[in-house]
Length: 215
Image (cartoon, rainbow, N blue to C red; front, side, top):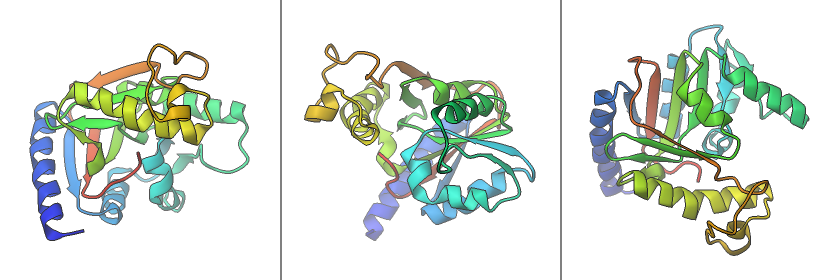
């Protein structure tokens, strides 16, 4: 990555972190995912029960391997061989975890977190339950405003996730969102949540990473 890109991403992150702080959300900038992992592990108390949201950022970044080595009780939905029923149970347990780790589909320059879920379990844990929520977001998630965030999800994130999940949706077939032709049970854009603030200061931490991560 060029120095110009690094400086650009850092400047954007500084603006977003200031906006997050006004919203009672802690913002932290890490130039690399390796530094982000180190900072994430510092945020987790020893022996804590840690839940994981469905996230390509979390699943593909290497963070899970670090968590598996930690002194904690990991609700590991990514371990091989789990049945659908076992994954569902872990989703329920996430709501009572001490710490919940996930990503966000988009984050605005003004510090709003924009997410769309199929079932709603990921955004549910972000909104209520766990004592601490850690959001990891690569710079590819940064958008101008909430409208741009929703557009990003519908036109970029959802098609890629639909393909990854093997869903028979219009966007998986064509790469283009067709809102009116996309219906349950295949549809994954069912529940929209925009986080504009956190009532309890310190509960939510957003780790902005100075490189692209996930979709």
